[in-house]
Structures are given as C-alpha cells and as structure tokens.
Image (cartoon, rainbow, N blue to C red; front, side, top):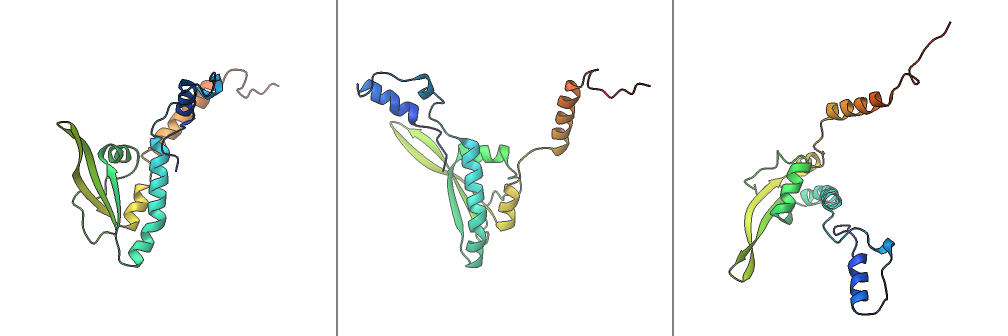
Length: 157
C-alpha cells in the first residue's frame, strides 16, 4: 500500500552522508517522506469493503486498529456519521481507536473509543464528503470565466 510517500530522497541523503555517492540530482529531491493520507484511507476502506461480507458470512468480526488522527481524517473526508460510537458486538466491522500518549519518558497507547458498523454501513463510509451541487456550481463558474466575446455564438446576417 502507498501509505508513506517516497523514501527515495531520504535514502539518497543517507548515501550522500555516508560518502557512498557524491551528489544528489534535482530529480531526487522530490516530496519528503510522510503519510499519504488520502491513498491510505481509500485503500484501507476498499479492502475492508471487499472483506467484510466474507466475515459476515462466517459470523465473525473484522477489527481495524487505528490511531485517533487517522479516524479524524476518515471522519472529515468520508461518510462516517452513521458509524456507532458505542460499538455493538453484533456488528461485523469494529474500529478500535487509540491515541499515542507520552507518560514521563515513555510513550503509551490508550484505547480512546470503539466504533462499529456492518457491511452496508461500511459501503456508506466509502462515500466521499462532497456536495454535488457545489461541484456543479464551481464547474459552471470556471467555464463562465473562460467565455469571452470571441467564444460567444453570434449570428451574422
């Protein structure tokens, strides 16, 4: 899965610092290493969607363990309003949400919440949060801005 972006730049910087290579080309100084949130979310949700009906068919539950930041991303970019905050054991899809906390000199993870839904609820989650009318209005505005007197239809007699 494409979750972290490219590590190539970091690799090349290490090789340069270890004197394995002499320089880094402009081509190799692309985007830094980091989470590709959109691709990760889409990939995970689609994989879950493909698997959840099998789990329902055999009477089992599928549990996704995720960090609170990732759930916040899912909530803000996908349709998660219907996912129940108090997980129900009869739901086939379970989400266990953890937060990373620093306690003195140590890091710990704490269970923040458990959520759940079923196969049809997971299908609903895949719906992106976008207002179709807003998209149409924006498209219309862009097109209207490109229309000039030269592009308008004129009939000469």
